[in-house]
Image (tube, rainbow, N blue to C red; front, side, top):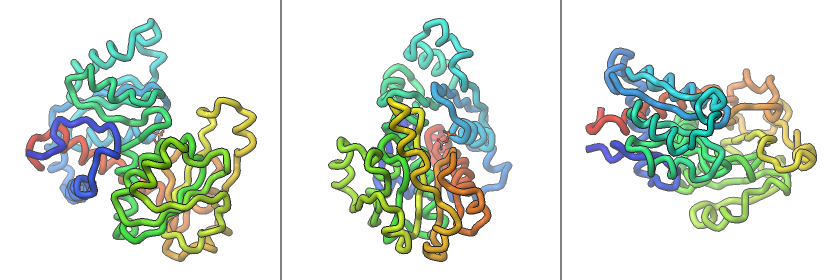
Length: 309
Ligand code: CP
């Protein structure tokens, strides 16, 4: 039996390197299947989604993934049009969705929300972003992108720049990278350094340095992972305005990087990568979004099929 069958996805911390590599192998396999073969994987299955925060990529890539493997999706993308507006609790909403679906995808502003949902749901729950805590399926997609584009993860030097305090993709990526032998350079304004409550745990698994100067290690990087400053998570707009636009990756900066370095971004982008970088061979953030559809297809296929496909 495949070990992911009927399992929840809460945190990237729950995965070993071997398990991540298994997911990547399944993703590769799905990419190689014909469209008609793919459609057999989750034929007749239903994905239910609940998004208590806005999303473009995560929700749509889950829907697209499920459609491509033969299933259907239903859900709530705008919580203001649901009975939450009448006062229905998260617990009751999850209970109802788990009646109508085979697997639940939840995005919610509270840390720990997917674990809470899993206590109520009798169907597997996938964390599609919980507060500032985690976005595990994004990290799986990010690691897969690095592996596809650089042909390896071990041995790479990876810069992560932007909002390291509030960016949940950063925490999931750092914990995921902790399974590999990589050098990580964290680049942020002083006020947006990674949260001290996470530093100890990450340091146990990963070598990283911190700087405010993006130029410091730029010419050594194999991967530059750029993140948006998360305006919506700042308690005080004044503090946001102080760091807004701190780093903008443009063609001038790209010239100082290795010729084969890649630029990633979980997206959405605001102004931290200039649009003229998009057409360079180094820009891989749209490919990264596409890989997300395949990694999510693999995850859904493994969760919903007892035997490997
Ligand atoms: N990367 C990501 O989570 O994008 P969305 O917020 O659009 O889902």
